[in-house]
Image (cartoon, rainbow, N blue to C red):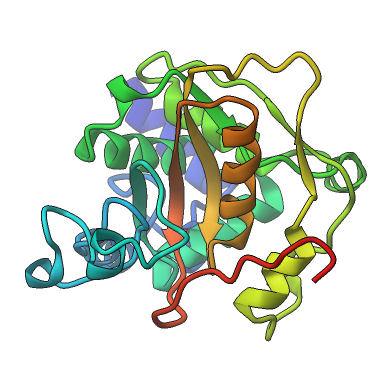
Length: 256
């Protein structure tokens, strides 16, 4: 009763709004309005490949994997993959709000934790590694969203979060440069990561944590560095998977 009274009083001073669409919400609605909540539920309830995260109809999955991953044709596959939903609608709005202000970490972290439990990944991961930001960008925006997300997602089960990757050079965010192809992104990110000095990766089962996967170039490059540093396996966990059609990440050679 006291909590409800406090919430009602707070609404009189600072009206509560939906985190996704900005409309006013009532006491019974926690973070999003009912329509956005229903839209979020639909976005989450979509079958996807447990190796690359690509949406597929349940009848197109073979033991939980898409055809490209089963046949080894997808270069963006991981040991295991968990996602909350597709990068669209209410989920996209929530992620953009999170990236901008780093609020909603409790909500989005709990959603990612549920996705991880649903895929049975929690017990098969030794360390959770957020995709890093360059120090200049961290200084500019004042936070690193992926690190906040990783801590929020693992807090309910006590997962170990370690910043074992560093970004060696500043790269303008891909979402600010629409129109880049998979090959463009792969070339831009090639060699951008390194394992931090003294990183203990030998034989460890690692899961990368990111907010959005588009073509997979960033996660693919991070996976390559972790494997070279001795990681036993590399999985991925993201809030959303953007869909640009079929096709694997193009992995360029150095100098090419």
